[in-house]
Structures are given as C-alpha cells and as structure tokens.
Amino acid sequence: MTGKALVEAQSKSTVASKFESRIKLIESARAAAGRPAMNDYEKNYVGQLFENVRKGNLYKEGYTQVSNVAGIRKDLFNMTTLAVQNRVLPEVVSVQAMSSALQYLPILEFKAGEDKGQVKKGDVFNSGAGYQDVADSLYDSRYIVNETLAPVGQAAGDVDIVISRLPLDAGTIKITSGALTATDDGAGNITGDFTGTIDYITGTGKITLATAATEDIKISYSYANEEIRNGDKGPAKVTIGITPIEMRAEEHQLQAVYALSAAYRLDKEFGVSMPLVFEQQVANEMNKEQERLVFADMFNHAEGGAAVVWSSTPRPGVSDKDHIDSLPIAIGLAANKIYQATGGNLGASFILAGSNAGAYFARTTGFNAENMPLNGGSFYLGKMGNLDVFQVPSLAPNDFLIGAKGNEYYNAGYVVGDYMPITYTAPVSLADLSTQQGWLSIYANKMVNTKLYVRGRITV
Image (cartoon, rainbow, N blue to C red; front, side, top):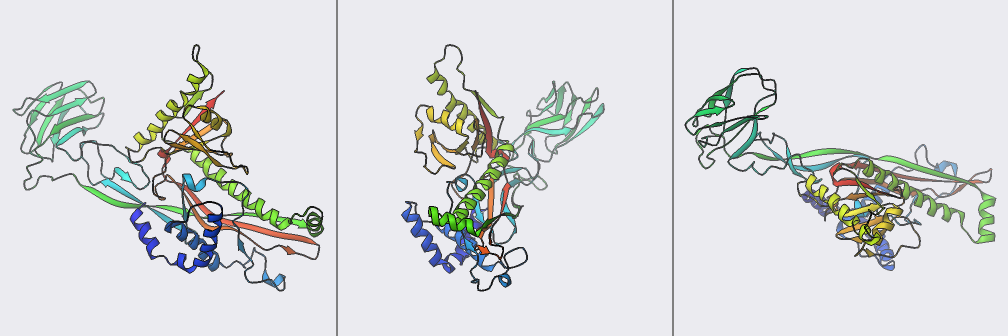
C-alpha cells in the first residue's frame, strides 16, 4: 500500500477538524487513562468514523423507527467506547477507517518489466504488503543464469539458440539439462553432452540433442552490458503498479430484550443499571468476536514457513531451565522464515500466544514481563528478544502465531477496515413491558500477505 498516498489523503482530510470537539473529549479520556496523545492518522481515523455515523441513515427498515416511539430525540444512536476487556488488534494489524462499505485497498508493487534469467515479467520484487515473488541478485547485472532455452520433452534434433542481450562474452556459455552439460570454447563451438555453435555478436546458434530432453534445457551466459548498440536490449526494465484488494464491509449485530421489571429490580436492589451493563458487555463481546475472527484467519492461513512445534518435555540429560531456554531459539528460527520469505522486506515483530504458550514464554531467561491487567482480555505480556508478545484468549492455549507489522500503520499483512463503529440504539420499552436495544458494527477484514505469519504449537 502506498504510504505516500495515505499520508496525502490524511493531509487533505477535514474530518478531524470537523469533529475536533469530540476528538478533544477522547483525548481527555486517553490522558486520564495514561495513554499518549493521538497522532494525525488516529485523529483522522476517529473523525472518519464520526462522519460515517453522521451521514448514515440510521432510521431505515430494520432499525428502531422514530414513528413508533413518540418524543425520541434525533441523536438516537450513540457510539460506544465502553469495553470491559483489553484488545490488542490495532497493535498487530493495520486498522483503517473506510469511507464506504466497499473500498479497494491499493497495494503498491515494484515489479520486473521483462523476462531475464529466472525472473519473469510481472514478478514482484517488493510490495507495500511486504511480499515478493522472486529474490534475484543478477537482474541488474551482466549475468544470466538458468534461462529456459527449451522445455522438457524437446524432441531430439536441432534446437535454435536466440539470445537478445548482446554482445556475448566468449567462454561464458553453459547449457544444462539435468545432469547433461555443454559449454562454449571461446571460439563459437559448443561441446560436451550437446554439440553446436554460437555467434557471439548476433546471439544466434544451435545445439543438437541426441535424445528428447527429460528436463528443461537451461542456458547461462554473460554479456557486455556496458556496450549498447542499435537493436540490443538495454538494462533490464522495472515497473511500478497498483494491485487493488477489495474490502467489503459486513454487518455484525446483537440485540437485547429484557423485562422492565427486571431492570427496575436490578437497579433498586443492587444499584446496577441494566442498559449500562448491556452496553458494556455487548461492546466487549463484539470486540472479542472481531479479534477471534481476525486472529483465527491469520493463524489458519499463515504461510510464512513450516509450523513450529516445540515439545515442553526436556531431552534426557537436559535441565528444565536449559530446555526452556531453547524455546526462544526455536522462535527466532521461525521468525527468520518471515524475513526470508519476504526477501528481507519485513521482519517478525510480534507473537500472539495462547494462555499456556504465554506461560512458557514468560519462563524464558531474559523475558521482560509486564503485569497482567485486572480486566483480562488480550494484553501485552512482555518482550522476548525483539518480539512483542501478546496473550490472547482467541487462540488455543498451546498455540501461538509469529507475525510482522512494519513501523508504519499501513505496513501489515492483515487489514481491518472499520466502516461503522459499535453503535447502539437507546433502550425502547414497549406496551408488553419489555425493553429492547440493538447493537451494530460494520467492518471488513482481509489477509493481504500470508507470508508474514508463521504458526506454532507447544506440545505437552
């Protein structure tokens, strides 16, 4: 995704200034909770959600109708920020505000513009989501390695050689097919398991196959890339393009129906407000369900490398402490798979851990532990080496997920698009003495790079 485009969009956005007074209230609440001030992106994110709620027609079919309830005020719907438990979703994925329910996420890609060696036109060298198709160290050089000359099954007889990067360096040509090998002698003759000739100036020639090829026929060579003549190919081409990823927001709904007398008794006898309890608990449940949905998707589709399996049982002769300290080594090796899979574009930065896995991580030497919050939920457990560890109830107790998120909010392999925050109707009491209340949130979620995640499990 283009960081520049997102930054420019933020600078042009007016939603933060439009809802400045509301954002100041949020800032005051954050300050009281010891949280840092919001940056420009976070202010625009909150402003866009306020704008979505303001513009939305919240009184259409399917919602509480104003005509059914006399005297209901026009700000019937309220945005809830109440949640009982912690959540860590914004720490590990890219959370962005959507301005419409169907949006396309632009992924910037740096790609090969033509075939050269083993690189094919369109292969991705780097992208905003951290992935790549190929890691080639020779695309910008004079060397061509293992370019396909003819496919497996090529019939016996003559095979034409046509090379477009010229002039060829004499004595550098090597032709292989499995274990079969032939080379040039520097004078235009090809000898070995294949025989033939080559013209170093025109790049044309041929070899003769005694039998049909049982594997692809590959050719390697070098050429004088400092000499560019009419008709010769120049430097290898590169391009930049945008791949749009569709983000379609879906609705998530809950409703509560309770007896008016029950709410009265709860308030009178225990001092508990039924509407407030529902607002807290429903928001809490919807937040937890969003994390379960996203983290399960990340875990199930992780393809950064083979799954890590670490046994909690020490090998004979190995102390429990030494065995526990082998866990960070296994984690480090798995984290390196992400770095390798992305060609060094992104490295692992966090671990999501089930409760048992988190307990083992916390026992390792050098683990910098944080205090568990009293209200539970997902929370920051501490730091293992350079990886932030979050304990989450949505993973199985012995499971964990290693993942990567870059320094910028848009550098992530998973994106959550918030279109409508958790929003609720005011309680409405009907003639049958029941009270009804509804909650709604609308968001999209999408995996954009499976190679930024490696799953693991601790066996007991």
